[in-house]
Amino acid sequence: MRCSISRLGGAAVAGWRVEEPGHYVLVMDERVLGHVVDTPDGDFISFDATATPIGRHHTLAGAQARTVEASGARRSSPATFSRNLLAVGGSSLLVLLALTGMVFLR
Image 1 (tube, one colour):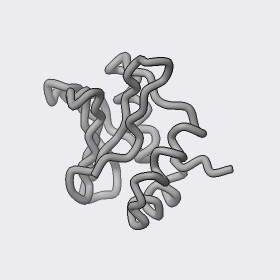
Image 2: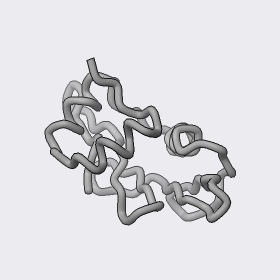
Image 3: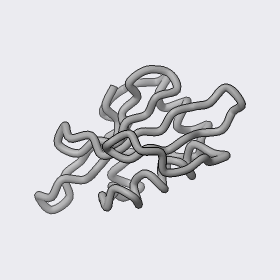
Image 4: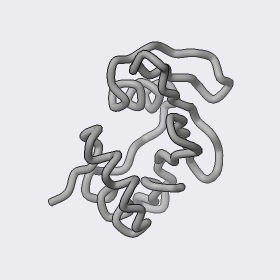
């Protein structure tokens, strides 16, 4: 499910999609830039595009931020992210992201 892909001034902006529960993929124009996966103990492991581990994190937001940073990608603004997420209409995804603090609704 795609959630935060957008174009900003004609330039592609990276965003996250949920491949399956516990597996988040950072993509830009269908190109995979990195991954984050849940661990059984509640932590998250970030990976680059070649599946090389970047680090272990206590929060999903921290793991995603590190993955974005390592990829050199630019994330959409909070307002653009919210509009794109709402356009998808995935209520369960919205709840998941709200719980992780990644939704910036006005």
